[in-house]
Image: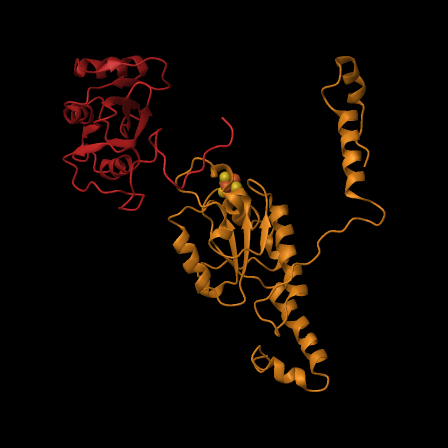
Length: 155
Length: 221
Ligand code: SF4
């Protein structure tokens, strides 16, 4: 399947996907509500069969007041990949957990929770992954500061 | 060798000819120690590729200096090569490893990260600003990452330090050796002047018509 075919197949799955432009691979934007169902569709579709979640990460768009979740899916049968984005409110970042769809999402979501503070619903074990359990705040947010950090002497 | 150690060194020194004997023993011990440094593999990030892998591989060959026996256990190592960024969470582990190493133990900090925090010194929530905040460091090797040659220079410096600066009379005490001295009659200012002159003469910001001349220019050494 080439890029356009893949994209049109994905878009025909549900009207909730919207295509994104200027990306290096096929990319769509999905709503956060019902993300689990949409991802299940992508995984179980016979021609898409995205059986692998390679990347789950987040971006802090501080000016827009959003946090974007980015998922990169790969199909080990057809060797194609797809990027799925989902925008969350920066103040109340709540997203459904995808650990029931791909088991690896459990750890990747723990990392995103640790560094960006995204709360995942129905996550089996939402603890910090990299930092200490008593850490305050989420350091990969752009406005994070603490006593240990040194400010740059130039601007 | 077990008979002559730091506990009975004062006793031996009291005998006639004792000090000379101890100095000879020192030389032998330091020669042996400096030529069989066993490094502990402690690569925490990118510097490890240069210092542990490139330096150890055939092209540069760490074995020439007798320091190729990298051990994975601190109990068998006496040289801790800090190759990479040290984060706050790694700190206690590093201190434990250092404490577990047998005396005498030496530390080389390679790369900007282990020296000062390097590229992560500002606006980082996790990077320790220099390994000296956690453990004593004997030799530092600057670079990001240092080339294997630079690391070898650091290693040779450490060997020199062991050979010249240690005695069983004062275990654990080290004197830093003098590494480089200017030739007689030359001062730092002269070197600086010459550098500035050279830079002005050969700078690439010259007018365009002078570039043609520069093509044929060879470096005077
Ligand atoms: S000094 Fe440079 S190469 Fe070495 S660990 Fe730090 S960032 Fe990596």
